[in-house]
Image 1: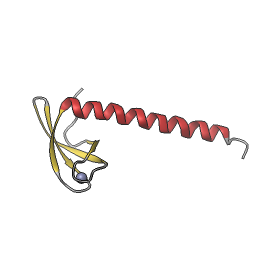
Image 2: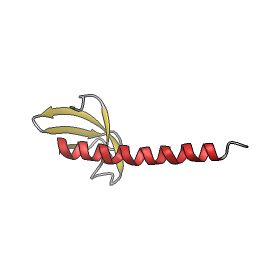
Image 3: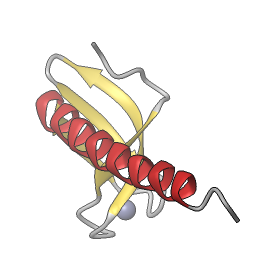
Length: 78
Ligand SMILES: [Zn+2]
């Protein structure tokens, strides 16, 4: 699966130093040009780096969601 140009993906911005949404601006071979939506810094990243980061992020997100669901079910009698 390719990342769509114009879509936004979470990536670790080297300038901000945190995970921020990055806008996908360009795609050439295995590389993507992405721009941090927080500080507007551009970066070239390998497709695999972006994909691995995405998987890692989605996994963490799923864990957070699972915890939230568990909590809301646990507090059902409120
Ligand atoms: Zn940034």
